Image (cartoon, rainbow, N blue to C red; front, top):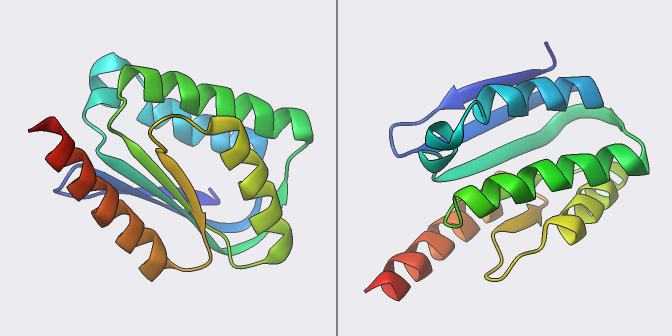
Length: 134
């Protein structure tokens, strides 16, 4: 399987991609994460790391459908964050397209070139969310 899940103790999920990723791979991994409302509410953040992926074999419609699925999950858990790491230009462009389709207020999705920036964004957004709850 070109996508693997690592669940962290802090409610985070790291999804590592390798090889060529297609819509069925993403659909399967999201089905694993989004089994029901309770499981969605327990995800504090997702980091989808495409840095080791060779390519994304996705159509424009596939990206739109993936974005709709993530938007539905964000409606159930409006505090969940989704960060995507894309080093390759083509994958970065497709990830930015997904990001444009998932944009919410406040912004819960982001696309980054490396893990350090994605982790920093997640940490900053979590701090901001915690301060706004008070």
